[in-house]
Image 1 (cartoon, chains in turn green, red):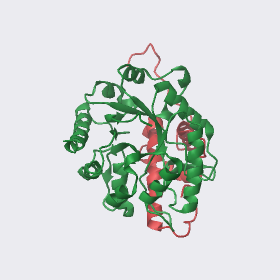
Image 2 (cartoon, chains in turn yellow, purple):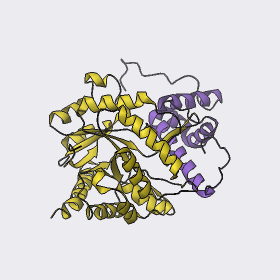
Image 3 (cartoon, rainbow over the protein chains, first blue to last red):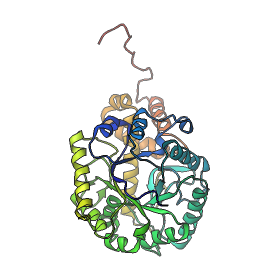
Image 4 (cartoon, helix red, strand yellow):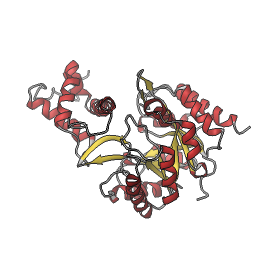
Amino acid sequence: MAGITDLGVGIGWRSEIDLTVERLPGVDFVEVVAENLHGDVQRGHLPESVRLLLERGIPVLPHAVSLSLGGADPVDLTRVEHLGEVAEAVGAPMVSDHVCFVRAGGLDSGHLMPVPRTKDALDVLVANVRLAQQNLPVPLALENVAALLEWPDGELSEGQFLAELVERTDCWLLVDVANLYANARNIGTDPERFLDEIPLERLAYVHVAGGVDHGDVYHDTHAHAVLPEVLGVLDELCSRVSPPGVLLERDDNYPSDSEIASELAAIRAVVDAHRG
Amino acid sequence: MLANGPAPAGFDEQRLDVERRALLSKRRGIVRMLSPGVADELGDRFRPLFDAYAVEHPRRAGSRAREDAASFAEWCRAAGELSVKRKARWKFWQSN
């Protein structure tokens, strides 16, 4: 896929900050959460604000949170189909979801749960990803999640696990540097080793988000300011590869426009520092 | 973890508890956002009541957050914690 070369700096579009996203300077692209777009998307029924951004030529990338591709349950193809419809409605070159599961045993965790990093779990994930890819009109990127706990008996590091996933499915990677920082804090992942192990040439784009330090636990909330340490991980990534895009995710406790603008500017400064 | 089941073998129990609390907190926050009137009426009781409800009623796969919020309000009414009748709405001809 040669479509994604330079997305620039973006922000997650949310209905609560639709006007903010429209008027912020320096928004080169946005993401929409596919599950939040209801109704007849295949007939072009999109929120007015999203339509306006599209008219301005701003790329809109659908991001899904509910495919549960790391789960043992059969893939829910209606969710995959909806994601594909959103992609076509916004003319997106790519869609994404996470390396995780959200449903198991008939229950919904309400959040993105990490999968065991075993060969068996990888086989399940690979099969689910292939099935999703076959039912999507555009390439699929998969994102590393923030984990608060580790499954026992992991056989691969997180980087190795994702590298093998890419190798076997030809998917793209969406690297969330805040999740990487969270995992370094909470479960002892080494971000540099992670970046060494993943195929950076398959990097679709990067997520940045804020969180809060609870002392013994870092909580990736998307409702607080971006920590300098998270920008540090972004800097480490940019020292290895020029990311095709970097996107700020803010999901709650929305700050003023100027605070969001300064976070976007800080992200751009890190990216530009490596471009010379 | 969602329904107070026993800890599975091999996991760090403290970490399971952190995860359990994080998931509960997220779910509680969503319900608070979706039904602010219920949260206001319950006041300080909202959190302990929600947590008790949540353990009894883990979210089913395919269920929606709004259904969760409605089911919690119903549970509170059945337990006598929430007034059964909604407060009278302002009539449109009354100015407030």
